Length: 81
Image 1 (spheres, rainbow, N blue to C red):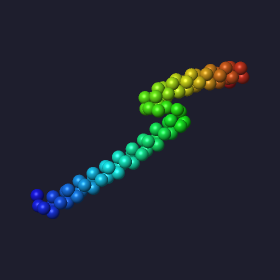
Image 2 (cartoon, rainbow, N blue to C red):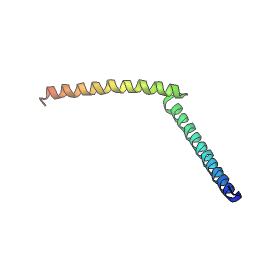
Image 3 (tube, one colour):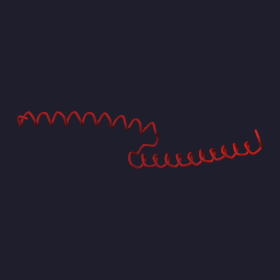
Image 4 (tube, rainbow, N blue to C red):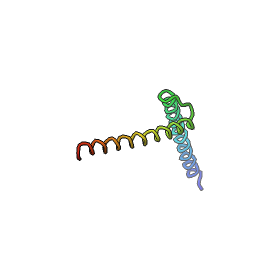
């Protein structure tokens, strides 16, 4: 490999490394913001707590959906739909 080819390859690698560092910094900042938002909105401090809360809320949602479906069926039955 010639000196100029090697230099070009090294430059491209350095650019990719710099891009990866910038992406990493950006993603790290986004993650920090998400964690702050979770803490503020839901009072959870860790991703484990957030997952537990999500599971709990999903179960509650399923119960509410069933209650709504039952309520609709009762209304339809009462009004002969």
